[in-house]
Amino acid sequence: MSNELLKSDVTAEALIAKAQRDGVETMWDRKAAQKTQCGFGEAGVCCRICAMGPCRVSPVPGKGAERGICGANAGTIVARNFVRMIAGGASAHSDHARDIVHAMHLASAEGPFKIRDEAKMRRIAAEWGIEAADTKETYALAHELAEMALEEFGKPFGTQRFLTRAPQQRQDIWKRERMEPRAIDQEITTIMHSTHIGCASDIDSLLNRGMRASLGDGWGGSMIGTEFSDILYGTPKACASESNLGVIDAEMVNIVLHGHDPNLAEVVVVASKNPELLELAKSLGAKGINVVGMCCTGNEVTMRHGIKIAGNFYQQELAIITGAIEAVIVDVQCIFPALPALAKKYHTHFVSTSQKAKIAGDMYIEFSESDALNCAYGIVKTAVENFANRDASKVEIPNFKEPTIAGYSVETIIDHLDKVVNSQLEDKLGTVKPLSDVIYAGVIRGAAGVVGCNNPKTEHDLGHVTVIKELIKRDVIVVVTGCAAQAAAKVGLLTLEAKELCGRGLKEVCERVNIPPVLHMGSCVDCSRILDLVSRVAVEKGVDICDLPVVGSAPEWMSEKAVSIASYVVASGINTYLGIIPQVLGSVEFTELLNEGVRANVGAVYVFEKDPLVAVEKMMVDIEEKRTALGI
Ligand code: NFS
Ligand code: SF4
Image 1 (cartoon, helix red, strand yellow):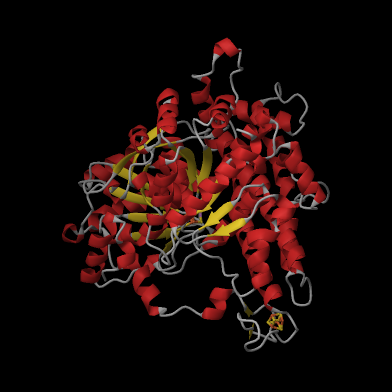
Image 2: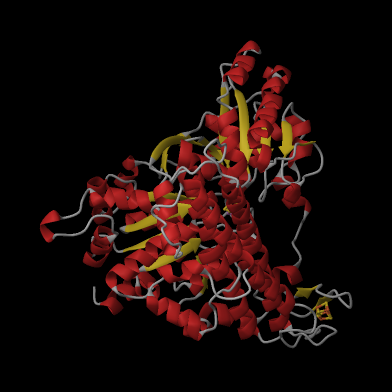
């Protein structure tokens, strides 16, 4: 199938043609089989929250049924569906985080889970008020901190600990709006309760609850996920890698790590270096074991180990279609249930490993943190042995890959900034002041976070790449996470050379600080790093986040997690530009609330704009207005 929606991606066309020759289906075939997608669902006006339904109301006022059987109108139905998406997304991020903290609770000097960034652990322990955080024995402190973090998910009283990282003005807004998230699980439960049949119908209140749960994700679950992953696996540093399906190596055992949770990925990386397994691979005729990453698990191991990026969300099937993958090892989230059947058409083993995401159709080898290394050894061994079954005549690997630099944690960005601190001004080291200063001086006009998924409703990767290229051309520095980061990586935007695509100011900053204009900050959970960075700039300048010339953008999002991210970014004071319109247009009132009304509450809005070029123009107006208001 030649699909015009694919034309921005050079790797896809050949592999889709191969899929046809091989007689296998891909997401584009299934998209076509869906024909026209349901207009009621698309408008968000279908409700199946109770068994009196499903009810669908007219997306056009005055035409057809205006209320469901219980009397819920379009606004209520749309709002409930939207905030339930937030709950789904927040639960995914936060449950992932909980697993990381559980692994930290198992950490010991003997491993495999060890404390790898002890300084960070002690910093966070002090931030959370643990006494003698700088002197306690490492693992005693690790276990104490892990228990405190676990309490963030279900504590009966109080609000999220990381909220105090935000500027005071922002914290005051959250207090005023009664949006300070309490226990993470409680916020998600409250949404499920509030959206039950016969509960909340007020759209402002529903969105308010939704935003509170999303803040429990961004400043709670996701931030815990990021920070505790760093403690356990090391805080990422700038590291070189390569990206796109060309990283699959015809002469090696190829293992795709797909999903989200670094607990599994980290031990698979360790197992792939095991001398016995390497020997086994060689005895079967392979030159070695090539672990490559996909989606956010990929981002996690790229950031920490330079593991090559095979691709993003929509390439998960294409990787298998190369015919050169011995195993796809998955944990949780964003994994097509279609993969096991596809893998069976080749020699590929599809291995699901998480009880939370048991995927029917091929191998299931449950990963247990308490026996992590043995589990990973067994899984990698299965992959290596499968090399013998590879059919060379079925192998076709697109020859496309680009050099990539990843690993820009906030700490690493600050390290880079420290190198340009003006000692004559007696500026302190270890702050974001140099970044704030170049933004305020206008050398850089502003900053943008470009994040999120791929979505077959739009031309793949084109939204990400267009938005990013147009922003850096206009001297806006860009930070990326998730599949957006991988889209940027695949076209060479995560390189020092990409400075040539920038405006003069940003180019000069990239040269002086020795960074790419597009900084890979990690997985989607790591959007919390973006919150941290922006907060530091705001605190540095004594303003609220909503005052800064900063925008959020999700050009091709699709998941509930993305709805949660967009919501906490807006609730944190950053206008967020969505290239895929959420399923809300069936309610004029709720759409208006997202696009404008909520500004009165949190100082930011959701902007819907499908055209990436128009979106960038709007972002630039936004950024320049913020600059004018600040008098800079
Ligand atoms: Ni984010 Fe990561 Fe990608 Fe979207 Fe899925 S992998 S957590 S949800 S598809 S960016
Ligand atoms: Fe219909 Fe109301 Fe039940 Fe929804 S909650 S399915 S609108 S009766």
